[in-house]
Length: 227
Image (cartoon, rainbow, N blue to C red; front, side, top):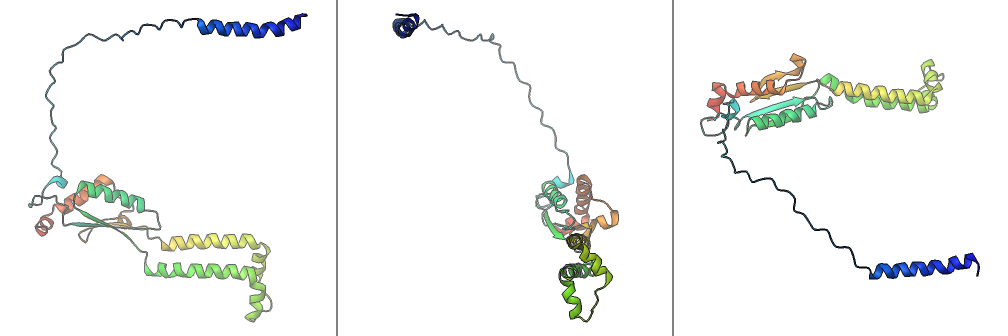
């Protein structure tokens, strides 16, 4: 029997004997669990009495004489430009005022542009589609209206058809967005204009607007009208 046969025969025998040895060998004893070291007991000290801070007497916390906040029965209108992306600022101001003056009715509304701009904004899409249609089918439209030779500007637009249509679309959308925007952020308290972005040229700060509404609501005429 050569060495290769001895190895092939002896290796299974060796593995079988090692399995038998591991089977009858008792498992090692489990280590004893040690309880974690506990710190020495320290007697509980007397806790100092908590000091409750006094609340400041803000106007929003004052009552209107009937046991309620001065916000009840009053209305604030925020008229803003919707197409100018002012909605996020308006919603933030609305939440701030409703928190500062519980019971206050805050109304959000769109502030439209002047009438001439609204009319021009409706004309722009029609002109936009007319120019695009002229670029696409102008060679058939001009003979129908009695123009045998198309003008030079049509030939220049037709030379770069796709670029001309894309430029017309972008310019028309820009003009329409500009004509529909008013840039307004007007705040009215019970019908009285208390802040105007059109006059100030800026947005009101949250603290600034809260103080303006607070002073308006605490006027004697406003408090007398809330009874």
